[in-house]
Image (cartoon, rainbow, N blue to C red):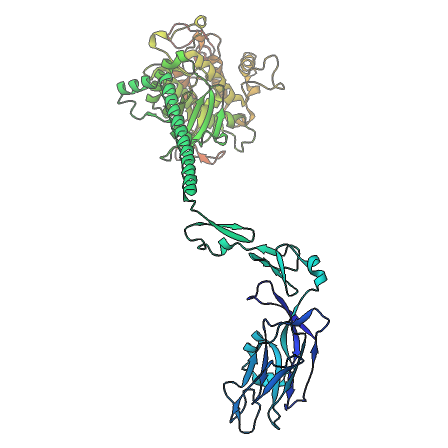
Length: 619
């Protein structure tokens, strides 16, 4: 017999079949008569009563299964006038609703054959064992059934008794030589561990009603309600959740409270209340000064991100920031502040806040909630004078006219601090790094980290008190003038230095040896006139005098630089060809005295006598 496939009957748990070609027994049909006997004796296979049925087709057909004792299995169909269901013509007869008949078959059938008891000259008679599902789906195709010689049938199999124990897997049972998965199990009983437990609770969640269904191996049990356990678990879980959330909220509250108290402590220690009193007493002049919160400046500087650093110095670090209103600012974070200097610091903040000079970096406000005070200044975009003088990567060096103008503007700013502020303010550490350049290359004096405000009766102090005076700023500014002339850094390289590495000492020696033109920056030597260079050099020489009495005041320095600067040409372009930026070109100013006149050379520049009428302050 030809095997078609293996077949599993879903309605019968753990039963599988082999689908084979089973012969169709025929008589009086157009094809030749067939009488093929099937004998499965000696094999483990048999025709299964499950899934198969015996069919007899044809008019007045009575078919019996042969080889069965007693011979009582069969059926008989009846016909009326007309054609048969299967399109088999008869003598003016057609089959009624019973044009074919079917019957059950005995179990474990090992042989199959059929005989027909009606012996009419015409009319095709058929008998066969067939897969019930296949027959139900092909009953309408009678012509095909008439012509076919084989139909599908299902064979079961059974194990010989000697193989019962060796073939069994756990959770199986044997019936009629076949293995079945035990009650509560499902799967293939012929495979090791092929039977698996059925989770009845999962298949039917309402199986136990209000009780709890508990799955067991091979069965299930219904237990009393465990809602109280669920409620207890939910309660405990909710309690733990509340404890965790409450602890976290308490931690955040205590942390916030600690931060607030710490900010209040810093605000008080840094003179916050004193500044508020000063702002109240100077209500008109300090209305634009703001006390920033630490949160505002943290946001402005991205928590003082190192990528926002503009520069670092001995006094602290400067960060670039943006306020909520869009203003770009520079935030200076000092390194430390001594408690004894708090009142002095607040007074200086008040004074600097009142300064409104075009060449002084504007102090916008401060923050006193941090460990060290934070000062907020206006942002100057073009960097420092030091960068343009000494950075070799600068594509366009500063022209001589621009250098003179920057020197004059810086001198005017320092002179304003000395003489026009309500209380004189001394910078004490003027360097080229403290002179910033805006988008039009205008000078802006900054970095008052070491500056001090001095009352009027304290302006004449000597070095014995270790105090600085206005003449200290003059000396520092003299070094800046020398940098503008020579293009060298305040500390010379080993290649340039002779005995001293100080640019000021080197310049003084060169001037006294009448070699000053040899150290002039070659970039400006071609642009400037010798008279202009010499006048600036002599002014720088006076500023660097060891005796404070012989130094000019910053007001005198600003006035002399104003005299040295050329007048601007009429209708001239405002674009410097070195920077492609707006800048004024100047013509030479005809001074009211000759370069070599005794009044300029001896009295004003190298005489060692200051135009100031003040008493002699030293360094």
